Image (cartoon, rainbow, N blue to C red; front, side):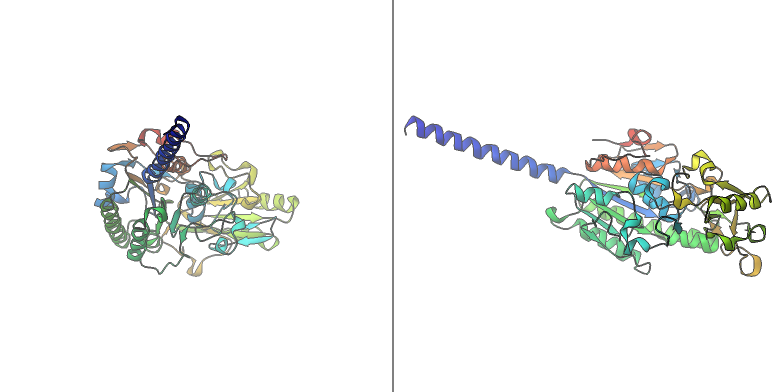
Length: 409
């Protein structure tokens, strides 16, 4: 073989080997990318696991990481907190400031589920959008806002929310997604179950019904964990809740103190957002309410407590009227004059420890046997992006620091 032909042959072989190595490395990279299964147990208070002997959750915490409590953002409501968890932002930055609110710019009211029809309500990219943008498949078996098209993107696999869809089938769907062929398999999966929240509202956090709901959900989480382990994949299971639950003692009627017909209001259970037509009307309403009763307080939006992080968005309203003590509040009295619920959330977590939720994690990238102090839920987002190798180029309210000691490469 002439030298020139031999050199060309050797060069071709080298190119082929290099290409094979790159292809193999790429395949290994995809194969080795970890998985995150993020589970939300709505309304699961920080002390429920020990109080009601949730053995599976306690075992997960012992095998991996358990927090002494997860601090929700204010307001401690379902949609603001679920979206803070998956964006790393406070509500004043991601835009969903309450389960229902008025937008003075759009001149529209937002209600739970409205985003499923119009994703423009959301101002931040949740984890599944970030993942899809970076060619990492995601799947959402329910999560508040996950059935919306946000920034023109949806998860690779998703289901429109249906509260009647059985939990057992939700878990089965998660497992089926993770059994897909490798190229089709999602690396980020969310799961949502609301039984504990519903029981806490209806019967109160110390009720037998809430204890039964905790036991029922704990059993399902245990089954999920065992089935995830059987898949032999580098899976990280993270179980959280959006908030806790407080026993309600009374109702505060603020209707007699001011003329609420002149403004738009959103009664949110334990506080009321007031939207005035102009600054003069807002001030009149403020002075009509300020210091008029020991049962509630009123704040101008720009003067809300700093720990709330609840002042930078017009959607918050001009005034926030909030109940003092474990009471509900509204512009009209409830039927019969008694609170409509026995348990409620939405309170300031700095004042009500009962608002704290849970954080348990176990898996290939989670150190075993770690217990962490209570931390804000906006700090979960950086941990998940680190596990999945996602790049986040936007500003965050959350930080890696509170959970830096739980991650292992």
